[in-house]
Amino acid sequence: MTKKNLVYVWSLRNAAADKAGQPVAYKDHERYMKSVLEFLVQTLNQTPLGEAYELVGVVYDDDEQSPRDQQLVSDYGFAYQPGRQWLYPADLEVQGKRVNDLLLSVPSTYRRHPRGSAEHIAGKQDFERRLHDTLVELKADIVVLDGLLVILDELVRPGAPFARRIMNIHPGITRIESPYERRGAYATWNALYGARGQKVVDWATKETEPTAPLYLTGASFHYVDNGIDSGEVLHDVLNTEIGPEDTILELRWNNFNNSLFPALRQGLWLMLENLRQAQAGKARDVA
Image 1 (tube, rainbow, N blue to C red):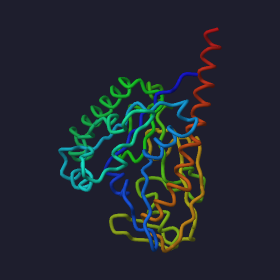
Image 2: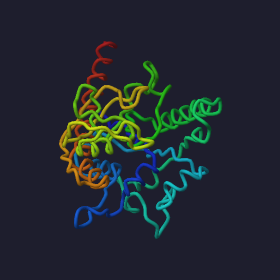
Image 3: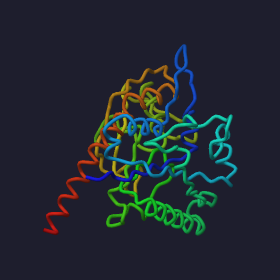
Image 4: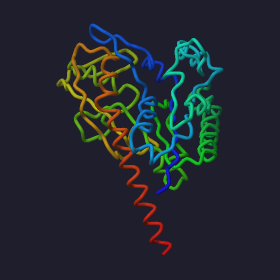
């Protein structure tokens, strides 16, 4: 089976919030905050997954003309600049290519407009068309979203060309039947509050109510649909212990290393098996 083209899609502003590529305070010392992209690159370079997948593009949706996005990535900028902090080592290579050379901008400029406005709706459709065209140009077989702060619509509707080919790696368990379910942008915060016996009922005011504490969280590798982390789960890992005194970055570090990285690696293996079965099914149909 030939290598599958893998495209990685993220929001730089989300990685910046994690202090990706920097040492972060961890208890009485510091630990390096490895981004999911850096882990993926190392996995493709150092494990047999690199014989199955080729990383052909790294797409980000941040809007360089947006004052808000400029502020959110102010420690990094929108591209690597010599002598400046970046989200991963500047010389990082994947399968013999510089990762910085794979970066592609597909800005979600529709976010400049009020949600629900005609400009927002039309802009969202235009963004998805541009993202679709980029994926086609890259000949993407599989797309992995990591911290993309956008909900996709047309790209993942049943029957669309990339339906069931776009996956999300989420820092929380997304199975609705799990007591550890943590969906949405506040998944890590919800897990942290949960370990303190609190449930946030209003994120605008941080209003909480008491709840039975839960001291575990994890990560999910799931198909992307039109909902918020609601797609079918291909693989998940529940292996991150939470200390009530953890900081948000300590919990992010622990969850990346104990649950999210393993879920991504193992999920990509399972995805490969699904692709092989689909390919075999098509061959039988032709025969």
